[in-house]
Amino acid sequence: MRPRDLSDHAVYEAGRGIEEVARELGFEPGELVKLSSNENPLGPSPRAVEAIREAAPSVNTYPKADHADLIARLADRHGVEPEQVWLASGGDGALDYLHRALLEPGDGVLVPDPGFAYYPMSARFHHGTVSPYALSREDDFAQTAEGILEDYDGERVVHVTSPHNPTGSEMSGEEVEALAEATDGETLVLVDEAYVEFSDDPGKVDLVRERDDVAVLRTFSKVYGLAGLRLGYILVPEAWGDAYARVNTPFAVNKPALRAGIAALDDDEHLERTVETARWSRSYMHEHLDAPTWPSGGNFVLADVDDGGAVFEACKERGVIVRDTSSFGLPDCVRITAGTREGTRRAVEVMNEVTGERR
Ligand SMILES: *Cc1c(COP(=O)(O)O)cnc(C)c1O
Image 1 (spheres, rainbow, N blue to C red):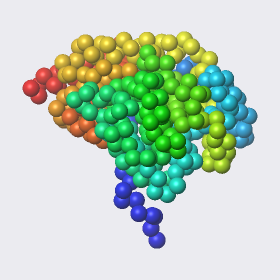
Image 2 (cartoon, helix red, strand yellow; image 1 turned 135 degrees about the vertical axis):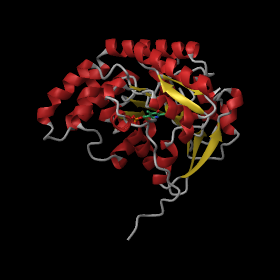
Image 3 (cartoon, rainbow, N blue to C red; image 1 turned 90 degrees about the vertical axis):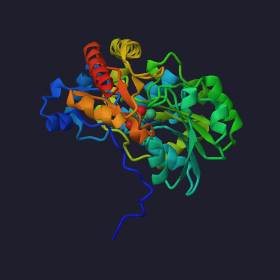
Image 4 (cartoon, rainbow, N blue to C red; image 1 turned 90 degrees about the horizontal axis):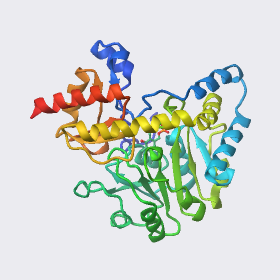
């Protein structure tokens, strides 16, 4: 007795957890600067923490009303119908729902290379066929309709990430619209906006309102600091919003996550402080890292260090954990999450020591 043939399925390589690395190196977790998973270095919104506490005594009941409440809040905020808000356990869970709703076995899914590993994983779980489109390093990973269309061959879903993980590059609303316009009527362009709050770009939700072939992904894991709760969503075109009820897990999101999500949406102060800190950190890294970096719209910076694996190891020995981007298809780079002021200064110092010694 065996599972189905999973030989095509890659294993997701998450950034290493702080406890795991601390134990291995004999550090206290507090002595490590962990900048490998684009988490919020300021922690969750205090209001969200309070909401989780308040939800605890009622987790014996299913969270039906809480789903409706958060969906209503998000629909209102984005100017869409409630059916268009597909809540899920993380943005990753929302990708699963989207593929489940769209893909017939063998349907094509076009993904960026380099790019986020969960797009092809999720597509394959749902019996899709994956092909890549290249983001060219020579063009600083520029994202244009023309560039993506070179590799487009009628796929059912085209994944776009803006700001792009791990490069930080962005795709303008005009380019996304041109892409949606040029692809087949039955092709959906999914714009993953996991990092949009850190960018000057307002995002592409207006295209979801105006068209029937663009969807947008958002998450509470990054700017809202709720990665550990697993809360995200996709805004889908109005025409098929009702498909959610046919593909979702009953009670897709847990009650503390739903309550925390609502509370986090009310905490503008935490959001503003998070964005301000990330922007400061991003500029500090661009300015002070000796390794070349690319401009970034996200809460992270990609640095060219020749050997990402070796630099990751050497930084780790000194208590700074960055992300080796080999699993994204960029083995000569590391991605460094925007930290606190203290964490960022320390990371830059250690990175410069390490890259200096390697020269
Ligand atoms: C972090 C991230 C997500 C969503 O993560 P979840 O924690 O599952 O919400 C989606 N796309 C990209 C590119 C990301 O970096």
